[in-house]
Length: 263
Image 1: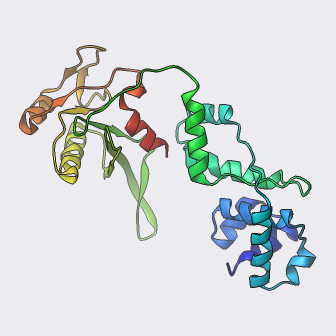
Image 2 (image 1 turned 90 degrees about the vertical axis):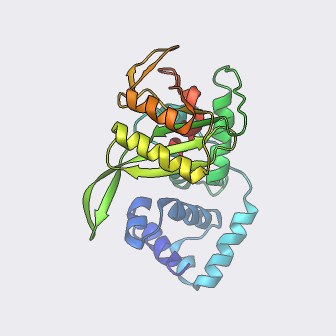
Image 3 (image 1 turned 45 degrees about the vertical axis):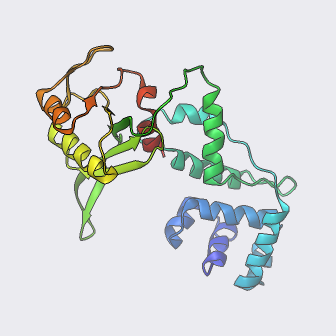
């Protein structure tokens, strides 16, 4: 990495934060955290780093990485609460965890942050122990879960933001195979148009399509007999399937799409 020494110089000699270094050099904050932590674990200060070329420095850091096999534990209880806030994702929480590990690094007890995949797996194992729930069994081709992700995304033209887009997500019940599409809004036309494109993407129609309870699709939300709009009923008749909204306040009924929006 050609900018590795620059990153360590800004940290050890300039005293800048990981975010400032990442912004200045075009890295992610997680990358800065990783290499600062490796430098501390190797016992290197700026005087020692400046005397090394890029290749020698990288060898020293990688040797330190192999020597340290102790991983820092994450406070998954706090992270689980943070995930309930709008706009918070596992990726964002992982980057904060990596930054915290780097800031709290001790030379006498070097700790490594988990990689993103292992961080997510450990969180899923933690979340499974929070409450008892009945296991849902899906059959191949039976259910398609659809929803909109919470935050909108920016539309950029010529380097300027020109609007916001809503992110539609669909996921198959067995495989979790995901389809995403940006739409201008969340009207009935957007919902049904995006669902039609999802069916074309999958190359078939499931027996059951399970959305949330949006007002664009449901005229009356009910736990047992929700009342769908005429447009949704016509859509279901056209494709020869059924549409059954998830129960209100029961996100586990559409867990696949909820998991896709978290990541």
